[in-house]
Image (cartoon, rainbow, N blue to C red; front, side, top):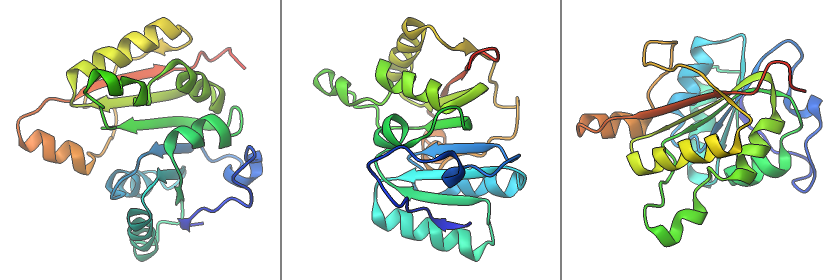
Length: 198
C-alpha cells in the first residue's frame, strides 16, 4: 500500500473500496509537506491507514521514497490540490480524521478567499467524515486562527473538542518545529462531526 496513490480517474468521486480498508480508520493529512507528520503517525498507529495530500511533485516523490525505506505500508501520498481532494474526490463518510496543519495563511486581505477554511470546504470535510470523525486545524497565524474559528462557528455543524498538546500523541510538522524554535505559539482547533449524524 505504501507509496503514491494514483486514482484511475481524477474526475469522479473515489469509490469507498479504492481508499478505505475495512476495519481500519483512515486519516487524511492535507498538505503533507515533507511527510514528517504523516510518517510519525503511520509508525505510531500501525492499525490505521493514512493518506497524505501534497501538490508538489518533488515532495511527493521524496515522501514516497521515505515511506518505502521505512516499510510504512499503512501510508500513501496523493499528488493533488487539497481543496480539490476534499471537495471532489473523497467519498462520503469514510474518513475518521482530517488534519490541516500549518496551511498557508494568505495574510493579505485580498487573498483571504484563497484560504482553505471556507464554508464549502467545511461542508466537504463534514461529508467525508464518519459520524464522530474529527477535523483538526493548527496554525501559528493568530488572525487565521480567529478567521477559522469564526468560519467554523458560523458553519455550525461541528462540535468543539478539547485539544491540549498532551491530549494524545501528535507529532510536530516541519513548519511547527521551525516556528516554535522562533518562539511562535501554535493555535489549535479540534472539531467533531456529531456521532448521530449520517
